[in-house]
Length: 415
Image 1 (cartoon, helix red, strand yellow):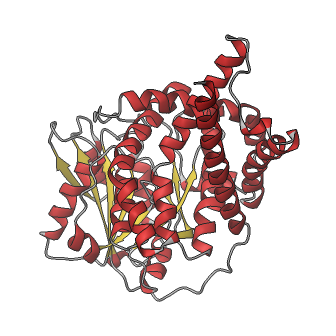
Image 2 (tube, helix red, strand yellow; image 1 turned 120 degrees about the vertical axis):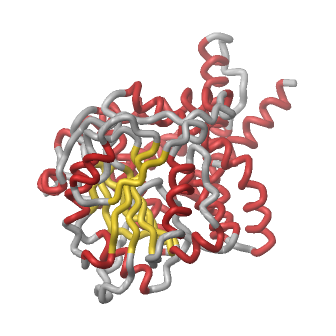
């Protein structure tokens, strides 16, 4: 029995090591950033959708922000989905001259359902738009956001993900951890795949879709992680999202560990749903079509299981050593020199610091908060473990937004 357990552990560790090397190798292609392209003349029209549930505190700042886009006003309209709101969100939207679209459906709560409803409303209107842009109520968009979306659509992109940045990384150690994670994702995950002409994944906000594509395949993404679900739906059809590095959107992150844990639990519950539904079909298509792009997205979809297996194996080894007087379980490190393990850990640490350096992060406070970043990283393990047993809980949980920030303040802090 012991030999069987040893064999299973070693096989799984080898698989995880191969995946780690694979991801690290891809990240290196994000070090170099392409030169900025010339702008296309403004020609694409956009419907800007904002999903909002009781967001009267922050919605005004976004409305002001969207009025001042460096894009012809006649080429875009803003529609705020006031989804099951019980506060003054709709009144604030109307006071800014924007469209407040009130939706009341307590049985179908959540962003995915709200978007699906709003798209049907849009398609019944006399004016039809070239692109559909989606933001969250707590966001702020760079003034050039629509210009960059126009550039991508003029070059043939049908699904586009902008650069999601953090508007409040200095507020607490947990917001700093989010910031570090997103700088890494943007530079060494999204940009690397963009540079290799591979598919990117959607991040839930700062997204743009060709209207005709949405009419053709529908939204159909109503899980707790509608962004990942729609990414996989597109990949199945051979439609690959593109990353737009210069189209920045700033997102508010939870201030406390408790609020962060609740948000990340929802994400992981949704990830399990998407992994079950899309991993094997996408993996089979990647083999059948010999497509590294589909394989890469299939691997991303199953990342939640990779985190879960890593946690379970680590926990088993800790229990074996600390409680059972081990080690009794064999690992690949029994057969490799110590420097291999040290190099693997060091590479993980270096990639996050490298991403911050490449993104020119200047805040000394965020660098100081790096000391607590391992707590944030390790906390994903129990959250994912709990999510596995509660993954059938489809109840949508709202993240409270209380931090009112203007775009000028964010940009001034970035230097």
